[in-house]
Image (cartoon, rainbow, N blue to C red; front, side):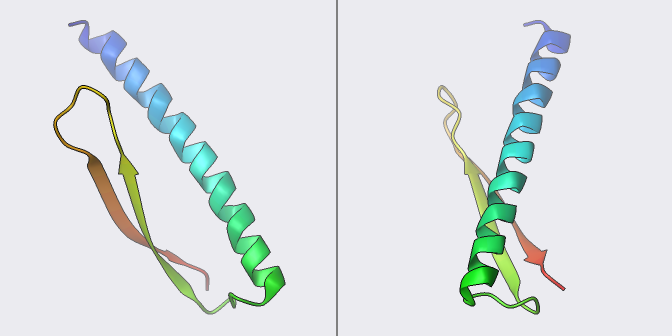
Length: 68
């Protein structure tokens, strides 16, 4: 396996995932605030799951998004 190629490919995927996820979360938060279902004082628990075909387990990352 070419470690350098693997690392570059993985970083590219994670960057794409991060940028896309951030954009979609921002749009969803804006829509919820506009609808009045979310206030600026809320925090959101988050869980991201990545499935990589060919690997035996899913990758799960949890955290909290603070809106204050």
